Amino acid sequence: MKILNRFIFTTLLCVLPFTSGAAEPTATGDSTVTVRMLTNKGTIVLELDAEKAPATVANFVEYARAGFYDGTIFHRVIPRFMIQGGGFEPGMVQKTAKDPIK
Image 1 (tube, one colour):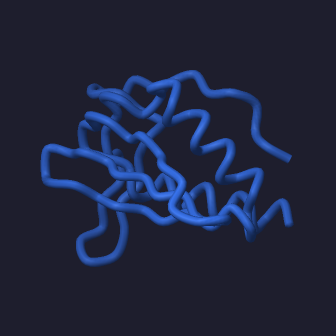
Image 2 (image 1 turned 90 degrees about the vertical axis):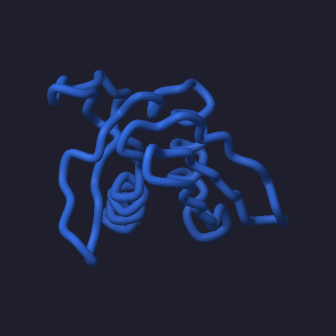
Image 3 (image 1 turned 180 degrees about the vertical axis):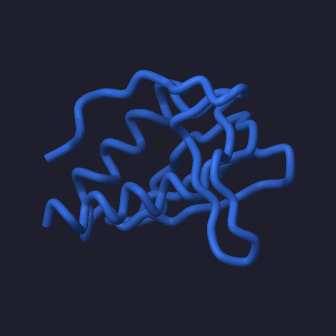
């Protein structure tokens, strides 16, 4: 389960904005949380499954509501494959995060 949570969290980090505006989660069902992220390249919509990964979703939502991802960058981009971000500000300045979830 720990590896699954890390995988899901890393996957979520792969879709953070180049420079984010807002990432405010909203509940859309009993176990689904929708996150609409505003980037300088358009809007990205995520659907998070809180039933399958409750700790990971709660952790991501807490970071988003606290504004942690605002102004972060994608620090790794592989065209047509993935984007990774959320941990760095412009200039590759690393953000201080909470302890990893268990």
